[in-house]
Length: 571
Image (cartoon, rainbow, N blue to C red; front, side, top):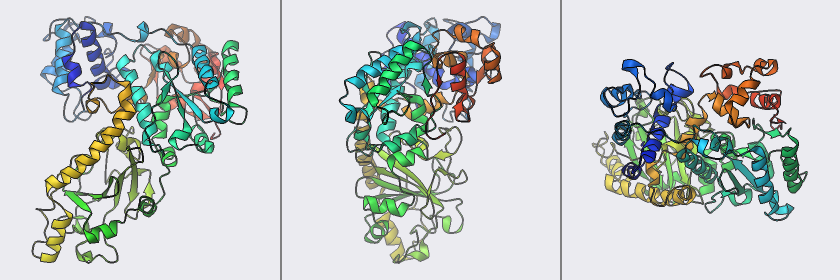
């Protein structure tokens, strides 16, 4: 996956453009290990001054001199960075070329959010109150919800390019879980486009109890301590009304993206049934009949990108509906070459040649054109994640090799369906049984036919995707060459929290103001001492962890005077 579009590479007509492109690559490819997690003591991938700091033969970047730049030696000559375990295909050639040109052009400094005016919590609450006031009467307002990326906008390590991806990820995640029939693009409510509103009814989420489940364990909810902030907070509460106000004027968009796209919230928002049979019934798909009348179309692979075993992918008419059959092994009835005519069912004249599968992934077209996902056991029972002995995520989108329903599927299928190469039509072992062989040929069509069906699915998906995320990018941007937005946010969100991120999340414009607070006994007892150390960090999971319903973040916010905990119904 390329960090920047080919068009963007070609358009690097100025030092600023080139610097921002280099920043994007270093952030996406290097920062997690060489920044957030400090795996190398001296290297800080996004700190321009440190990258250029004289360290003899290991000076990371020497402006204008490739051979003297240790970064180039590792990336452009030895090509052992990033490690293969993180990027098996290696860094794309166009990204290497950008880093090469950036060094040769003098390694110009990139711009961070220090050039963006700081947005205060008063600004945020005031914008929300004004928008809510103009959103109709109380019967309409109760369905309006707000998302914020203000803490990211205020962070100097987050580029303008990244902010576009965060906005796109919010829209994509909302529409990937929508029960509605049209694409709903969140509406920016402030000039800086850091606060977005959405009407829950347009997503089919008008049951407010459903939204209460979403924010039930929200770890960043606060009630302002500052009197001026509290005035705006109270105004928002008044506009919602006592019954409709859930206690949160807004939720952080990054938290929502990585939380709501996972079970159980993903299943609840999209109303995914607990059993595959119920999904078939809802979508009016009859796979057994389609097998018998041979309208089902298949491609079987001896190895795929998510499994070391053989895998079968099957398409059914009726919108786009795809299902995979996955196996723990290639032995016995798990071998598709020997048993390509499964699964077994009453009325299958070829049960003798039927495979027995262990699980599967279902992808179907939502009413708005986006895709929904479901993972199941071989019995059809819905599961939250796929067993790693059957399928795995080499990109660790979920934070581990587990394929987690929703978020992992969205990341993997950024273009829609993955390319299929069938090995069964010409590689099955039933050639000496004429009737079975003919059945295989009718169910496993020629490659061109299967490609045509897949292309039709992907064209419809891209049309919906473009409506959902296109507004956040320039009109000529090739959206499919961008990083997949949801997985980009998941990766960024999973990084350790450093002093800069912590200070912006706690409402400070300067990290030194937070440092002054870190010496206090109470905040030290929270376990936040590492933030006061040079390059110190804390884990995101710890930052969000809750005891008695109050997260470490909320306790820290109270200690520094930013706000007291607002607790959702789920705690």
